[in-house]
Image (cartoon, rainbow, N blue to C red; front, side, top):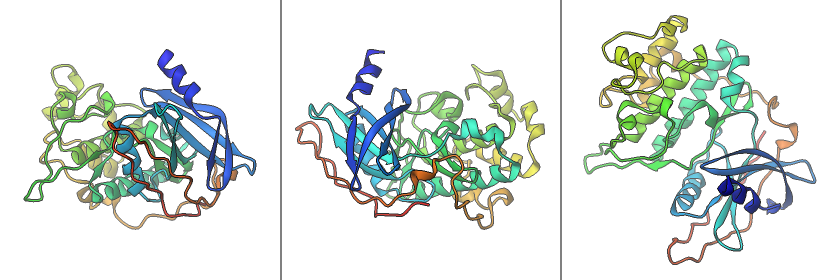
Length: 320
């Protein structure tokens, strides 16, 4: 509790970003990742400010977000380091509610559009040799019912490739138990892009059933998963349309080597074909979140134990 309170107190009351002054408003969420506040400008523009402890992982998150410019990834606007240099505040786009809460109001068509946007965004990340490593419905924000943005890149990892161009396993400490792949659930090294595919399969199952197929992907600790490993499907599979069930079965392939990549999943009927354009008018996000951002001031950490962060900002983009 004291740690969370210190993060909330360390969150700046005022920041300067894109030529506007933003004032701290309501608390959006807290956790091991830090504290996130909504901030408003006098013009009614909103941004999200995420305050975390300054560590090497903070630098990694900033550098990762700085190269991920995609319509379905939350945009990075800049960062600010506290005077004591112990805390860092990341400034990001502020979107609507997360998919965990919004999915109950979505039609089957909405779900297909949203899932394919998630596939598109994760595929883009993998093309940049970056894996998210903590995909879950709480990390998918709804700009409107048919336009999502994936957030929280604090656990993202650079994909390791050997001299033959094959992805190498690596250890990760981030993730959520119900979304973790079988190997990751055993705290062993995994191919992180295949972990993302597994999580996408769990999310798609959750979107159509409002349940999880099992609590943990460890056969010795979960009977439902043990049955899955020998070919028995959970009862809730009966609620999935055939094309959806086909995607889930492929994404939840237990053998990591046999599990398809995001690009391979895109060949399945449910995931193929052009995406409908996103709705132009936000429904969940506040209508005042349309803005034109320019790079905010650059803040560098002059610490001998912390490599200076690259000044990375997204190309100014008008979001609608």
